[in-house]
Image (cartoon, rainbow, N blue to C red; front, side, top):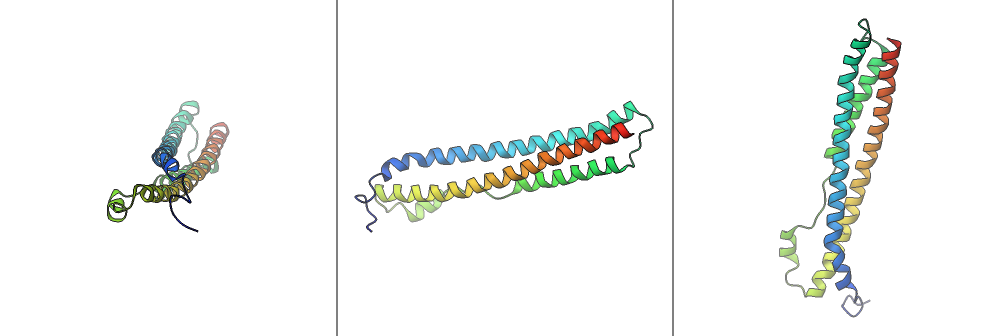
Length: 158
């Protein structure tokens, strides 16, 4: 099979999707990381606020309890997941230096063909990165729910 313009005439149209595909996934990665950071901040606020609330509601409340200790354990795991999720992987984009070194000698059609191929590789990599970060974010949400349940049990049980 020939790898030329006659065989693949739509390359010039597919090339129009290269920049938007990068923009879309960069935005999604940033949004995912922002959600993770917000969840970490919210969890820290709850974790710091509940002991104050507990002491205000019941001056004799014990901080040495299974429920309170479990809540703190959930918080620590949640924060560890958040740090891992934030730092997990790298956003993949095509390097301008690589384009300079490998593609400037190509015809316009061949350049666009290669750009579409590279954008596809980056897209697949970045989509997987988003999925991994999102899974950790969902786990963090479940841990936060567990933490709040244990904090409420601690608060109610005294």
